[in-house]
Image (cartoon, rainbow, N blue to C red; front, side, top):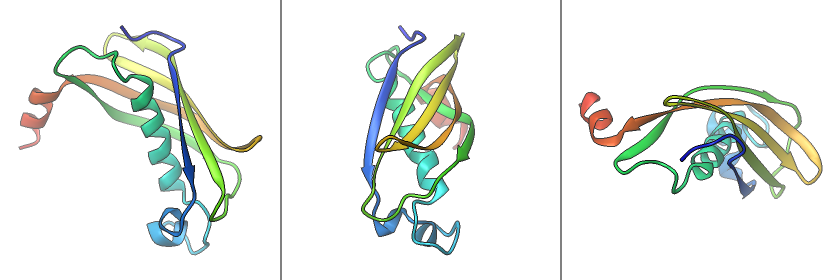
Length: 124
């Protein structure tokens, strides 16, 4: 059962492949915002691990993220996603991404519970 307060954290050491240059989102060798978004989504998925009914998965439908500070190659960052609301199949998370004690991004992420087979069939 999914409930408010469920949480997970995912850590990453920033590599060249995670930079804005590599991701095409800028021309500086710092952690790219698309990678911050992906890390935040990964934390949300991890927060739900083992809590979904059989045959179900979740899909991301919205993310609002403020990328507040840069992180260079070699920096360790951690994304934490916490369930703040469950309304039927809609799950809303707060998301924070930090480098040590420095907040580098914050926002909200929405995911919906879907039947995996039906969802995959709908995109064919």
